[in-house]
Amino acid sequence: MKTTNQGYLYAFIATICMSLVYLFSKAALNEISLPQFGFWWFITAIFWNSLMAVHPRGGFSIKFFTRKDYRTLLYIGLIELVATTAFYAAIEVSPNPAIPSFLRNLEYLFVSVLGFIVLSERFGKVALAGAFLALLGAFIVSLRTTSADSFITVASGLMLLSTAFYAARTVLAKKHISEISPVVLSINRAIFLFLFSLIIMIFGTYSFRIPASAFLNIVVGSFVGPFLTSIFSYSALRYIEASRAAIIQSTTGLFVLIGAFLIFGNLPTAIQVFGGIVTMTGVILMMLNRLK
Image (cartoon, one colour):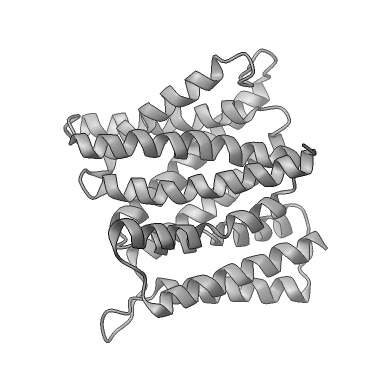
């Protein structure tokens, strides 16, 4: 398989896996608290990633790491603490996991903004139009439409925080992807989030016992999420540009929308679906403009 095709395949697999993360995590969070979820979610993620790390072709290697590489892992780990905590908190408080999935597209907007600030990239007219559509769509999705007065939801605020930090993570990971392998990045992420959840569990006196149904959702979800999604997302960056991967991954919301209806029996409102489509259109316009 050509390396470019490998990149597209990895990005598509990461998109499907990420869609499942929204569904399995929402099912688990319906039964347990966020700290309990984080503890069990990331300890199982460490287990899945460790299985790959010990495999001869797993790609795990820190033999030639420099002090700079370890510092990079520290920075990425700290960024992940904020981004991932806000991400799962948004899923917990949102009535429908499809809504955070649409708002996740803001990450690609922030990636472009960081490229403009850090790398002095220019925005063309098409890119500016795409950025406007992305923000407009996100605003539409974020509105409460269940009452006469519309307010921005807590979930949308958390996703705004999450996507901003995820964008910083993506730029930093892309910069160092040739020195630090995807499995190392994935394990680093899982360890940071597991230790953070463990501290919250201890000082918050949460119970380590959870229902069997929640644990089953966590085991399956952590396999497709912190393991497969992380591995394939980072692997895609090795073979194709981040903008190409972003176009594919911006369709995650559509898969989540279908899954949410099949599993939970609910759908976003018509205006929120419209907002999600507007956001995706804006992101694709921005990414296509960058490819040109």
